[in-house]
Image (cartoon, rainbow over all chains, first blue to last red; front, side, top):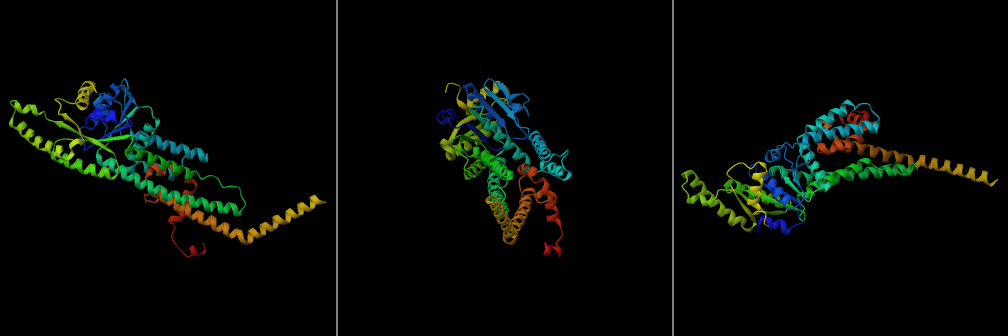
Length: 327
Length: 91
């Protein structure tokens, strides 16, 4: 099956992700798919959750932290600025404290905590994935294309989400039990109903957010996850390993795209020995890919003669991936 | 005077209820509130543990809960950090 047909036959899959080792072409494929879909008339947002995002580079336009920027009709791109999001979030918490207790300034101890919390390593990941929920929930686009962080981070997030989820369940249970004691005391003292527990409400909100963000990654109906691989031994082994891990977290795998295939027609030309060796090696690895991934390979994309930056090259890449615009 | 009678009766009932509450209910209420207080401290420990150097909850989400526990933070820290001594037995 071709990549274009996957999109045609599974029109409900609106969250598109490309995963794979770093540097194999995830951003390129994200941008090219976004371009292709936009040309088909869909409203598309391609966004990066990578702190070292490169969408700005590929579109040759600075979009970092500027929200969704229109690249061309129907095509929007966004790079999430995690630091800015964390700063805004901290300010929100401070404002809430001042408002709730009518204070002029946040007590020193609390302020220190707010600042220290932002320095935790998990903070950035949580902030990014939380931002993703906001983007996706807004539902302004037909397609959302994730330029994913390298595999390890996505897996880390998925495992983190399931741990958080169980953790939230446990503290919600504790909070509910506390509420029961409150009610017992209220009944004994013949008071009216105790106040609704705001913390319980927050916990339920947090749980909903975590489930939503990890739920998108594992949604079999709406998510299409493609692995990017290149015909090299390490990349093939790593991809197979990662595919196994992703399957364990129920990420729906839609297929593989093989990138950086040196055109075999070169072998008929006068080429240096070095390139001939590369071609022989590539042939062997392509045979492995064919044997082990078989019909799950949706496209073989050739190594381009120059960098993929700018809309002209992105269009060329989209043609290679989807076989032109003829559909 | 039926109204006065009803009033007296109500006043008597009210006092009886209070006495009964004092005899039986008050201790239970105190116990319920004390248990709840302990649980509140446990809750703050597992959500705001990093304040004592024990990170438990992912900080992004613990910040959301922070505003609600601001008033309890100082008593909680005192309770968590104080040394155990004889007076604990009296608490």
